[in-house]
Amino acid sequence: MTDGDAFAAPARFPSARPSPPHGAPSPAAGNMEPRWSPRGPLRLPRCSACLLLLLGTAGFFLSYAVEVDVKDASNATCLYAHWMMRFLIKYETNSSDYKNATLSLSSNVTHDGSICGNDTQAALLAVQFGEGHSWSVNFTKTNETYQADFITFTYNTNDTAVFPDAKRKGPITIVVKDTMHPVQLNNVFVCHNTDSVEAENVTQFFWNLTLQAFVQNGTIGKKESRCDADTPTSAPTVLPTVANVTTASTTTLSPVPTTAPKPVENPDTGNYSLKSENETCLLASVGLQLNVSRDKPLLININPKTTSADGTCGNTAATLRLNDGNSRFIDFTFVVKNASANVRRFYLKEVNVTLLNHVNGSVILSADNNNFSKWDASLGSSYMCRKEQTLEINEVLQIHTFNLRIQPFLVKENKFSTAQECSLDDDTILIPIVVGAALAGLIVIIVIAYIIGRRKSYAGYQTL
Image 1 (cartoon, rainbow, N blue to C red):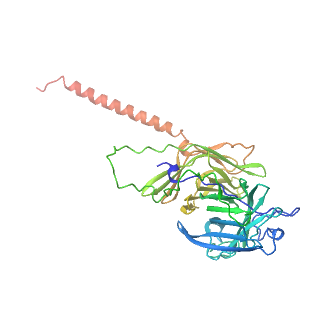
Image 2 (cartoon, rainbow, N blue to C red):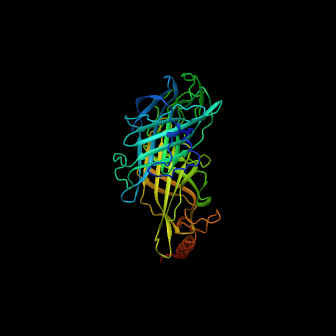
Image 3 (spheres, rainbow, N blue to C red):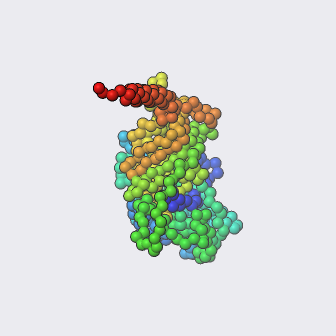
């Protein structure tokens, strides 16, 4: 089975948050609180809201669908939304390691701060849940359309159920700008497929979305504007997951000739880079293939044409995060060792992989290995290995790499530095092996010829 059979491409979902007041500073990522409030200048008098919670399940984790119906002063609906969401958060532990935490909506969701909006003020959809977590998205309008502007997400690491050993305590706020396609007024925006938004070690997942901002006359529109991934002509389907893709049908209508399975070709090589202050700080060129072993092996090639790169650069640590556009996320973390020595080297220390079901956003597989010592090279150079390599993530997941070249530190002029090649690419060791084998074969031939010659010489004499 190919990778396209197992997972489908996610849709893009509007990311939004109100713009700061004129002249106000932007919030710094990770601050306890943003420096400007998204609610103050947008507050409308006598605006009430109604919140309904619909219990549902999604994969491994209990998840809640949220329905928010915001009313204006006349008790007419002015903002409506129904959706599901989940968060994957990478955080630092007390032992200075990093872990992934999954945060889902709980049953105690509130809607404080949700606002209708009007021609001059943005609409705001805001929810609070769990132990001090909150999420909001704002919408602006023109004469004919509306669209989202910013998403604000605050998670509280004091929530020991989600972050049992977090090194940093307290609320952490991130802001993401991701402009959606404008939607016609009176239209409902619908997107059943999964969307993902990444920023500051947080990936936000959304699915089963229905919303309408600036509802007119209190009546939800009947015409839908669908996201790109939701084709109106296709019937809803439940795509296979890793757990069931190997299950075969037991019903046979007619004999089918047995054919060998088509081998999966090697993946295409993708080129990825990260920038810091408009300067390239990380370069990577690699073909990636996931090997999931459940019942039968499932090989998934990562398509570089749909894969985007994100991450962080630093003096002693760097992370490359790849999102292949099909609900698969791979993080490679590199560190510098011997930081105080004259000769400094870098190596691959940690790999994290998350596979999601695009239909409901549930986690199909989440695996990590933070004890690697791979891809070792001198700082300021690059590491290269053309031959296939295998990274053992855990007992059910491997990553195969092809045509690898990586430089996570000290990139100059947007080019790879001199490469240090892996032992698999070193052909010099083959020369003595080939020469030795040839000499051994020559000796064997001489011995065999000598034995045959002696036997022929004895055959000309008879015993008296």
